Length: 341
Image 1 (spheres, rainbow, N blue to C red):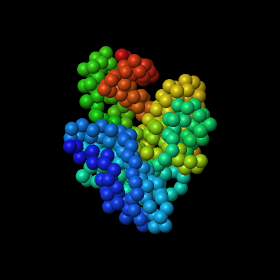
Image 2 (image 1 turned 180 degrees about the vertical axis):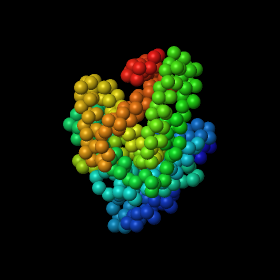
Image 3 (image 1 turned 135 degrees about the vertical axis):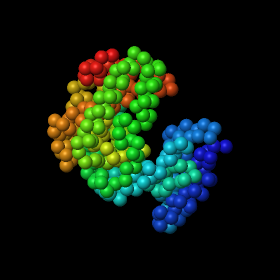
Image 4 (image 1 turned 30 degrees about the horizontal axis):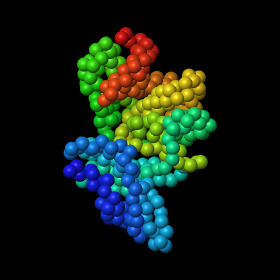
């Protein structure tokens, strides 16, 4: 039996949380009940990749019930200890206080290769885009921008690189050689332009990183689905698998591309999508120590195009490909960068 299935057994989870979580909350007396919900449920014979939510009911010392949303992110082939370490580090560096926050790391399990953390509750930015709740979208975007500015302000020279493979375009999973191989095999028409695109991206990134000693902590997976509205004032960002030391412009370019992609798909107004992008960018630089120079704009644009190609690649090589959604993205980037297809 796959060992991860133990986390779907309520009695086992109650015993696990009694041992690992209860000591972290001195006011709690016992674990009363757990409701288990699988958000990502890839379980094979011996391997797995899961994100599981445990809606956990505790009894405090006064006999009152307290509910905590506890999550586990676990992967049989990619230990999630970096997630635990990164959450702990960020919590200790300002994200445990104030209105810009993160999930709270609870414990790491070597047995499950999983991080257990107290989750954040609320709807994500993409849900508001999808519902066309434009008022909330425009209220949430500046808070998201300030969250990223807060992350990028943490001195990187004192931080651990929690995911070094993710620090460079040429090494980000699954790696440039693998991507080029898959495209050449499945979509030979785009093979040459993909090579030229990645040559351009890698060259531009290495050129900047070689010109400065400056580095920043970056989220590495910046997009609207990872921005959570917790309440009227409180905003959180989730999913820290890709946190690493890199160029802060990467988070901005990635977020802007995904924001535009989602807004165009669900709202369908190019002028409004541009307005949202500018609102995010203006809010970021108003809160940041950085300035939006022409050189910084160029780097943001490069990462925007890189993220566009990553989005296209996802549609081309996923389990059930949707090439009709990928082709226009490739053609847009190639046209803008004057690369022939």
